[in-house]
Length: 180
Image (cartoon, rainbow, N blue to C red):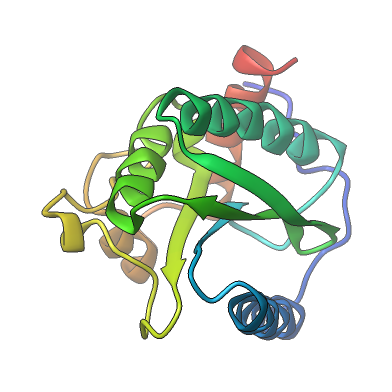
């Protein structure tokens, strides 16, 4: 059994996570007021359970972010990191990207699918005046797969098919195999 990376960190309540979501939406609105013609790339980790950030999760995040930025450069998408959060609710980067939103989304999905580590990431692509982030289905791409069983991730999350412990063990293994 792999040693867990979830033994440290401040447990987060659903209220704290929702308050963070409100702050995210407010920041996105502010960025679009200042930069109305750019694409916003909002990148965070999908972390199950009450521990959303600690030194291990931060290392996972920073390792994945290097891969994301390399992918953007490879696709010749110019980008600027405009905000970086390191909160108890998790790490998150906000990038302004110059480029077609569909190309940015395809690059983000390719990044998310690149490895076990990058599959832990959620890279949302947003455009001013759109009701929601650009989705995989908007690009005729298959839905995100579950880390553990390759079913659609939303189905597993909704039905709680896998325990938080199983998911955390999987993430801990990735840390020890790919980061440490």
